[in-house]
Structure formats: C-alpha cells, structure tokens
View 1 (cartoon, rainbow, N blue to C red):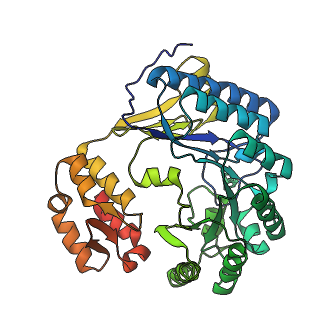
View 2: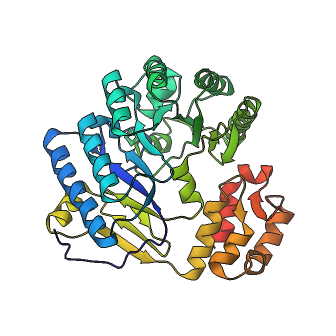
Amino acid sequence: MKMSNRPHISFTEPFGVYLHIPFCSRKCSYCDFYSEPLSGGIVQDYLTAVTKEITFYRNLLGKKAIYSLYIGGGTPSLLSADQLAGLIELIVTSFSAPLSGEITLEANPSSLDQNKLKAYQKAGVNRLSLGVQSLIDQELKTLGRLHSASQAIATIELIKDYFVNFNLDLILAIPGQTVASWQETLLTALSFQPPHLSLYNLQFEQNTLLAQLVEAGELTGVDDKLDAELYQLALTMLAQRGYQHYEISNFAREGAYSSHNTLYWEYRPYLGLGPAAHSFDGNRRFANQPDLKKYLREIARNQLPLAEITRLTPEEKKSEFLFLGLRLRQGVELARFAELFHQKLEDVYSEKLDYLKKMGLIEVSGGYLSLSHKGLFLGNQVFMEFLN
Ligand code: SF4
C-alpha cells in the first residue's frame, strides 16, 4: 500500500501514540472536541481507514519504538472490545510495545460494563481514564452528560476490580457549583482512592450549547473568586491525602503520573492517528482532517489525511517549550532549554523573567523555572508573556 503524498516527517526519539476514536452517543453541552454520532456503517469505514493510516506511518517511519499509547476521543469505550483489541495489536506490531509500559483508554460511565473491562484488560490496556466530571446529578445535567452520579459511582467500583491504575476526570467551575457541592464530589471521588485525578476548569468554548446558554443569560458561569476557592479547596484536600500535584490540573499518587500526558508537557514527540488528531515530531506540528468524511476520502485516495503541517521557527519552539513545561509543577529544566536551543533561557527571556518574578508569578530554584503558588492561579497570564 503506497501513499501518494510523503511529507517529510521524522521522529528521532521514541514517540507517544494518540489514537482518536471520533464517536460519541450524544454531544455534551460544553464539548468542542471533534466527534460524530455513532452509527454502524461509519464505524467500519473508520476502522478500515485508521488501519490504513497506521500502515502508512509504519511504511513512512519504519519500525520505530513508541513510548506510550493513549486511546482517546470521542468515546473509545463505544467501540467493541474486539475492535479496540485489533487496533492496539496493530499499533504494537507495527511499531513496538510502549517503552513506558502505559496503554491508556478513555471511557465514559454510560458505555462501560464488566465484559468490556475484562476484554480491555486482556487487550493490553493497563490504565483507564473515566470521564466522571461531577458526582452531583444537577451538575451532570448542566454538562449534558448521559450518566448519573450513581451510575458513575457504580462504574468506578467496577473499574477497581480490573484496573489498579485509573484516573478520574472531574470539572470545576460548573454553573451552579458551590464549595459544598465541589467538596462532595471530591470526597466521594477520593473515597475510591484513585491513583490519578485530573481536575479541569470548565471553559465556555465557542459554538457549544453551554456558551450559547451563558450568552443568552440562561446560565451564569462561576465568578473568579469562587473559581479560585474551588481550586484551592482541591489543592488542600489532595495534599492532605498525599497526592502529588505534578501538573496544573493533574494529581497523582507516587508512581502514578501519566506517562503519555507528561510527554506533551515535556515537549517530546507524539504521533496522532484518526480524524482531528495532532502530532509533533520535534520540528513540525501536523494535524489530521478534523472531519471524518474528509479523513476517509483522503485515505481512500492513498493520501495521509493531513489538514495542516507547520514547520516551527526557533522562536516558536522556545515559547512552546516554555508554556507547556511551565504547566508542570517542577517547571522547565534550564539545562534542557540550553541543550535544545544552544542559548541560556535567562538570556533569551531576561526582561520577561524579571517582570514575572517581580509580580511573584514564577520562581527559579534548583535548576528549574516554575510557577509560584500565586502563578498557579494566573497561569494564563504567565503563558501569554511567552507567547507574545
Ligand atoms: S463524551 Fe467527551 S468527547 Fe464526547 S461529547 Fe462528551 S465531552 Fe465531548
């Protein structure tokens, strides 16, 4: 099988693989990720195309070692266990078993059962990431989620029977959320002792139902003061229970950091497969067609389904390295910046660093530049400095 376009893409170190499964039963009110309603025929077309895409990359890159495998969406747990197992096997045999040992699958409480969990485990999945979002029914309704709090709780109990390593996704700053309701969600989630928690701040993304409702005055977002209180409550509760706060939104028990996600923040390469998936080879960012029909059409014509490919300038690389790395609590390593860019970070950004230090938003210590506690709450302000 030959590709008619062979863009120059090369990976010089083991890369993460992200596989996008673009199907959801229904669109959640806050979501702007690319997904399509699930229907029988289209799933088979997708599986045929993504199989071809994996083979294209195997031919283009050769049999390279991969670092991690992350299957996200959409809702990957909508695929049958056999379909997922087939894709995992193809990726592992085309490249390698992940060097970090980590194979993560995203799942939703409304599409999981015991048989699927058993089959995922058998297929090699060893980390499950569950989209819980809230354990308050009214908040789940606002988010347009299909599951109830009790369904999420029953699913977490079930997951614990099959997976030692799992993550729960939760959302803060949901319209109507209070300190008490957030505390209840956190306490219930923590009662299951999840090895990993991701706490995302709700964003009102353009063209989502939630943004329209807020614009029409039918819903009100939480104000900045409450938003900061909710985040601080999470920081305190999780620290008291021994969780390590290793990234702005991510918390883990010792040894349970997400290897795949850490690769993004450490500015390491990854290959995205499936519609709308993004890739980075260390020099170029490239993205697949964010539309299933176009994706299928390109692959049927033996073309890599790329919508865009951008070669980064040295300036863009430096600023990306910084604003991604500053998401990590340990921050960015000054020596790695010098190794990658042959310049000292302190020389390139001396004025910005002085300003941000004066504002109390960043710190330099032990060879790392990181956000201060105050900077954690004003991360976007810091990132914008490096973007400009
Ligand atoms: S299940 Fe996830 S990807 Fe699908 S619509 Fe909801 S938030 Fe978006």
